[in-house]
Image 1 (cartoon, one colour):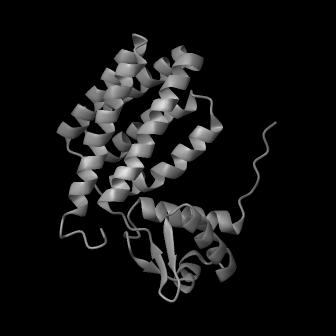
Image 2 (cartoon, rainbow, N blue to C red; image 1 turned 30 degrees about the vertical axis):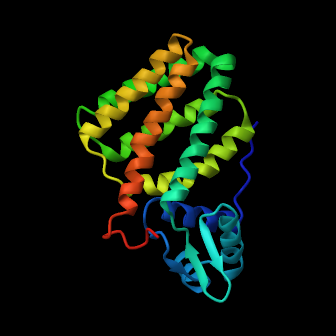
Length: 224
């Protein structure tokens, strides 16, 4: 029997701040204070302080001595670094998943693609983004490596935050979905190397380059 352990106030505060960063309720580089967050969440300063320290370890919060506490900022170099690590983790996951759970992985990836095809009949950006994130998480799920999964989850929090600030036209979603199909097709042929090459291009073209273009936009005040 699974018993759910209640979250501590620190965990609750950390998750609320994390989600607000991901969904753009806090901007990159924005200053925050313990008092502000304490009032916002109806919590004392102690769990807020502990949550900020936890998020600082995740590189989502920057605590600058004698300056204050700030939401993380992103640079073009950091986007390159995050994408490089993300690609390495997902390539490793593909190689592990194909060897351990090939049939289950392919079945779930194909179902994900079918669900996305239905969404494109009446474009739903937010749901499509959720399904896109799930496609990549499935690679980690079936690698059966909890260390790999945890590292990927921590790495992609900033990815999710930036993705929610990008535009997603129907044309882009159609192209992205086709790349997912191409990855699955190569995996079904037991051609993991080709699938990994497509994955690398998919991440770089779909996220890395677009995110760096957004950072170069003068209208984006907290980019640097």
